[in-house]
Length: 270
Image (cartoon, rainbow, N blue to C red; front, top):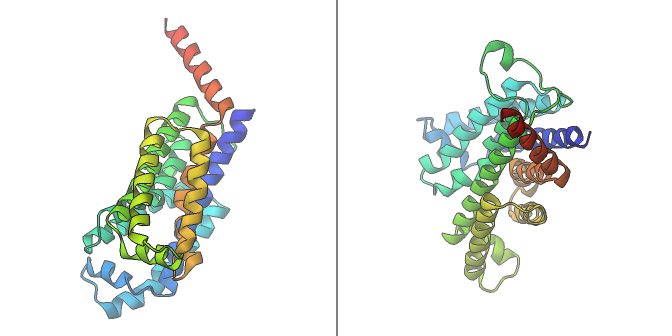
């Protein structure tokens, strides 16, 4: 019974996270974020057309996010994986550091793990337009894949953000300056080292208390964006959701049942 309850928690953490990515990203389309012109330029689209397309794409994103909250159709989650990768790749393709792509691993990682939890990816018409039932039992194999997937997602998003701190991204330096730090460059370096060490710890041996610390850290640090704070915070829902889902995966009761099931499987094979 405990496992079923926790798998539902994992489902909702990832589902809400994916919806937040859609809605936060869509909000920037509605308000026509100027830097998006650089990303449209990757596809040869000029500024005038970019500003016309932004609200359209933003509206679609928001509608997708709301629909995912109301009715979790697999096609929507699958589209967010593709869309999340495309939009994140636009950053390095437009001249920004590759770390910007890695740091957004939660955007495409959260919906991927949501589909893995629901039995994996099949990509046929019937599967795409079927609805995920959060009450369906999850086998131990799927749960193991989700846990591993979440470890990699959290590793990437924390390494990416740490990398941006180490290379002293101007936006981060501005945040630390606004917070009153007299030496924001040193703060940026220290934060970068901390986040990369934290990422390695998650990948090698994730500990539940540390995951909770990283979750609080991530949710707090993302509040410091100087412009459109709430939209920036919402758009990064994939990061919080991935950390929270991993925290649920590491529940001692789930771990004990997972070990017990594996032992029974080995004994049966003998």
